[in-house]
Image (cartoon, rainbow, N blue to C red):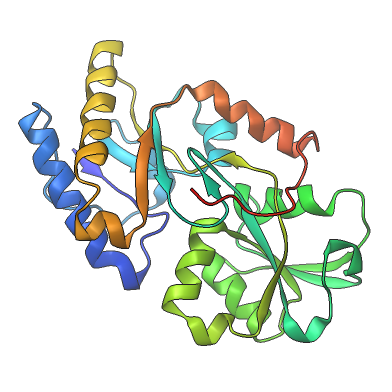
Length: 262
């Protein structure tokens, strides 16, 4: 079996993710699941997501809705106690350099955007949703990761980027010198946060796996790993909530003025 939680597995918190998995794996084994003893960090994420051996993985809402529906099943969404998150939803911070002088999205002109990936809900679609019909982007560069987008804006190699709320919180805590000259000028519409997924399995086994993970998150929230990773709960959700990705893509969701904090 395979377990992989790559989406927020930054070097500075990798040890906490290992600790999280050790605890969760022991809990799953006690509930009768064949859980691996270590997280998988090698291999292409799409191959891992679609592996028939996937017990627990994590993906982004956009690739799930566009490419993974029917190939995997949703376990639920971890909740985070950070600005820009609210229960099973999250948003993106729209960041610029302090030197830009821009105070809000209407001030932006002839901007170079840094985008972590074209298939990113939080880094690409979120930025498009905030920009709307404004003609303010003159060029876009592919950074490959949210942290790299932050670095590009900090180095003034790009002027604007949309950063996943959890990544923005991690950047502030792990790289304060990097974000010192950056400013948030907007927040994207709220979207379903990054779901935990599993390979297709029968309804009874799926429900048992969901319940086991939910119980673990509910009863171990005082652990060092849980606190350091800022988990605040777990939401078992239906896959239909990701239809909001379509709403965001079509411009039917509106940005929010201030971030949520749960």
